[in-house]
Image 1 (cartoon, rainbow, N blue to C red):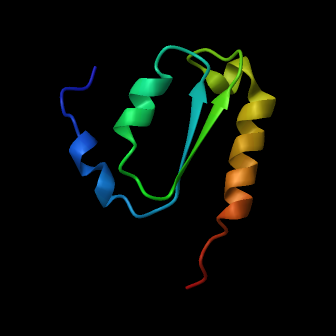
Image 2 (cartoon, rainbow, N blue to C red):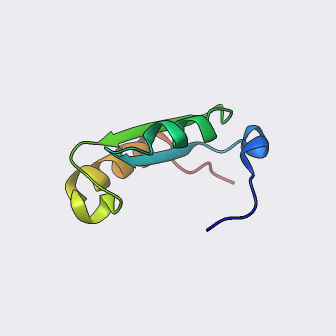
Length: 76
């Protein structure tokens, strides 16, 4: 898959980030990878597998809608 590990650069991300994760075995790995991002939200979708948006679209879009509502665009 990926041959470039950017985990050590995650702390450089300054934008709010949302991570919508499946309720599976990779949760801790992803949480560890994004730990250095200061402004992040992690949402775990129960009973979802790899394709969260297909397995539980209601929970997926609810998470995105809530995140976007909490982080409106900044006016120029």
